Image (cartoon, rainbow, N blue to C red; front, side):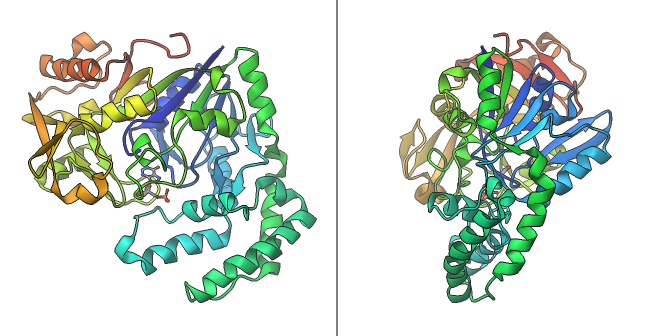
Length: 432
Ligand code: IMP
């Protein structure tokens, strides 16, 4: 039995795509367990860049079967385009090795509209979403008015459900958003066409994942976003609309959580965030600009510049506990080369009071939170090409050793650079 969850330990964009791609080389199955086309995984393979939003990064490897599990929300147009992009890039994607849960919910055209217009209408309280219809799709799921992938291939069920659902959603759209209602005939026709294209991939994935876990295969559960964006554990309401944490992996895949052996958190050597919400260590000066420039910190899905800041150990210790990390992978340490001083928040101070743990009211306190920093001397050497932690300059090594000691779980890999293969691996989490 060797199932591993890989998830972001901060606000997403930790460089998970490359890590999932790396471990997919050891995996029999890769299961994406939450989120939708809000995610963007960038892979650089032999100099060629490919960005994926829905299909697990493992698809570029020969071996694993890739699965979109129940709690993923799927915008069929985006998925169909992505399948084509993957084929055009020369990778094999067929119904034998790419499977979509019939229970996964569909992001419908009205979800995209509601997400985008609501952000404009409620500008005062906007979340800074990716505009990909994620929140409204999950809302409809729990309100029991969702459309599932399995409905797309069952015309009579789809027609019946859509007529009920659109009655409700059109009321909201016309009365609150003051937009034209959606035409059921048009929505139905389009949905059935998309269903036809995706039909060969749609199935009961819980059985496939169960069989793989039960027979001791290497199953990699891939998270999207990060723990600080978890709808329960994150900086609510500035979060995404799903649970990003490992418990959600088993729930979404429809298998026992006892199958999960290791939980690997991906930790970027500094902090970034896109959208609104607290980022206590944010740097709005030229140091932040340098982090953004050196790290290429622009959203893979929306192209938005990411907010950048120093590593936040208060958040990281929280996410290590909250997500139950058994190990971590450090990414983008090479981005810090050239900074004379590197800082890490070890606590917060709010109006004279010190917080060693993440406070419940982080959102309302946000403007008053002052990080208490620990400072490290920087380094100037290029880190790329190091194949062993001992080859890093002393100051970089000290920084890494300190992070390891603070998190209290082993570091299984260090990724340096965007290319496949660039980095230092000390332990394969499937074997740990
Ligand atoms: P939504 O998931 O599009 O509803 O956006 C909610 C929040 O999560 C916004 O702040 C987004 O910028 C953020 N978010 C969603 N997906 C990602 C991601 O893949 N990486 C980083 N931030 C994300």
